[in-house]
Length: 319
Image (cartoon, rainbow, N blue to C red; front, side, top):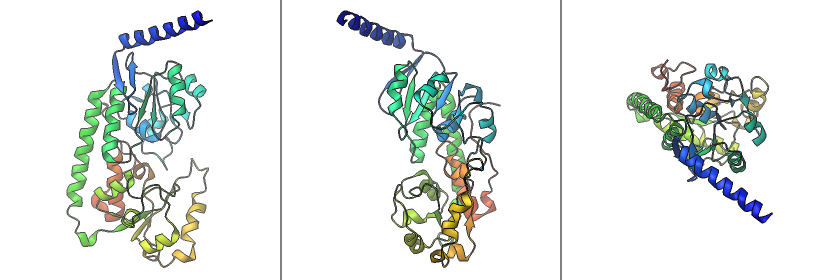
């Protein structure tokens, strides 16, 4: 038995060495793991909407083995048409369900279930762990990593260039807004701890010239905001959620917890009717389309000089 086990181990090591020798390229993920890619992946699977959106700016839809189930929902996604072009939809797939899709690359954000990483690698599936971005810089780093993993580094560079150009255009308009006209916003989210200092929404507010009420009150991302604190912040505008899970979730019931609460009725946002519904496909975005989150926030707060149509998406793929 000992001899047999040693022979098996030697065979496994030999296969690993052979895979490395035959690799077309190697990618180092955020955990410091070198992932050997035998060729450009043709059946890519990622474990979040944002990483799906990044990939769909780097590769054609037919190179995706599946995408998140919400990607074709216009209440939550800014890439509905692309989402519809991928037949398989996933939510929280098991290792067995992932393997059944026969991916040749799996991307898992570091906030996800990392227990699947070793099991998938044991099956011979290349797995790249990336950051779950919390800032513009981390979004850019993730784009670069995913572009390398997909074998499309040039397309990654194109996306970064397009992001910089778009942010520069928005920034020129934001600079012209006088300080006394800057307005404050509080995001009411189903994720009650989301929206404070240290998240993509907070940085998008800063770039849009908008005061994020949660961050200004010292609330960090991940910390819930009480209704008493909301009254104390007293923002100019409330951003209300619109998520409905393809019509299966009663968003109005959730919103009524705030809109019908007598203790909130004297807030200026409610008294002045400044209850806005920004496009959630943009404002929760942590892909290259984060730039449209910046523009969407500025559009809702400062008007048509920042006008933004729905379903905008940055892509490095030539049509």
